[in-house]
Amino acid sequence: MEELYILQREVGRGSYGVVFEGREKGAQGDRVAIKRLPCNSPECIQLYLQELWVMRTTSQSHPNVIALHSCLVQTGPNTLQLLKPSRLPLDLVESALKGTVPPGQKHNTKVTNSNLSLSRKRPVGRTTKAVPRRCSALWLVMEYCEGGDLNQYILSQPPDEERNHSVIKQLSSAIAFLHRLGIVHRDLKPDNVLVQLSKSGPIIKVADFGLSKMTERLSEGDQTRPAFSSTCGSDFYMAPEVWAGRNYTAQADIFSLGVLFWAVLERITFLEDGCTHEQLGAYYVRGRWLTPLGEALCQNPGLQLVIPMRGRRAPPLPPPPAPALCDLLLHMLASDPDARPCAQELEGCLRRALRQR
Ligand SMILES: Nc1ncnc2c1ncn2[C@@H]1O[C@H](COP(=O)(O)OP(=O)(O)OP(=O)(O)O)[C@@H](O)[C@H]1O
Image: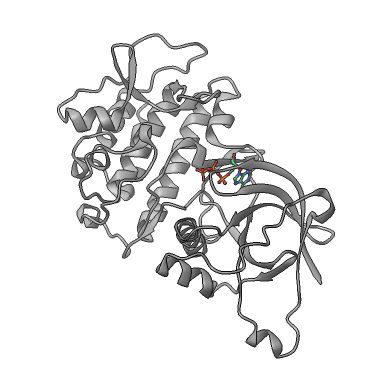
């Protein structure tokens, strides 16, 4: 058995899997995050394959997109195989296509302190070729983000305008990169933005590509071509065209980014039903109710958003964004997707708006 990684502790759980902090084996072993995704339904397998595909495509080529180090396939209670970078586990692809669960799902490893190491069995002779792969879980090994997600990071410290500007610049650069590659994230929200801490400030990492889609590479102007129809995303960040159930394009990401930017710049938060921690996200106030911006604009495309936000919010608050930034936010949050800047334009617009402070 060759030990590859040491699992150290659980750092979080998502709807699908568990994430651990770990280390690469060896004296200088880098800190890594290891996400275990149990393959127990064709729907979730499809999401994992999408996530894996996108992470491989972007792998380590943009500082603000989470980097995948490797992927391991669990084929037995204690058996893991390193997946070659160009390969997908065929039984999982088949399962996603056929809508059936692959056999071999019974051995879901319960991770305890006694088996906190990820080893792979070396392939033995020629026999490995004949043994069919039965994948019960995928283990994604990626860079570790000690700053937590954007909610935890921003809301745990006093407002800081410089830091907020750095965060939104990095986010816009990440989305321009993804859209250039033809990747539309479709679930941009603070939980899916992770933070690494460095001496020079936060390094933002766009993560969680389970809902993302790959299209042909998008050049400028291509953003208007309707590409998707399935409603997906998270209520408070979803664009009006997604709320309306219309076909939509990569411009839906720009809307989500607009909600996120506005919330970061003005420290706007809300509490979702059943949740105990506040989340960054802008909204529209209707009486006593907070309505997601996309929903409000879907019902009334002529709605005039007021930026900076009026109304009392709990201090400490950052200074209101400069007029040029407010204009840019209004453009990003336009009801008409074609009226929003595309990701490539956004980077330039943001640089100019930040210069005009
Ligand atoms: N690379 C990482 N470094 C550090 N922590 C991480 C990393 N990836 C995920 N986490 C933490 O692990 C937790 C679960 O992450 P995961 O991506 O599985 O789920 P999620 O995004 O919270 O949920 P969902 O998939 O339901 O949207 C999150 O709280 C996240 O902060």
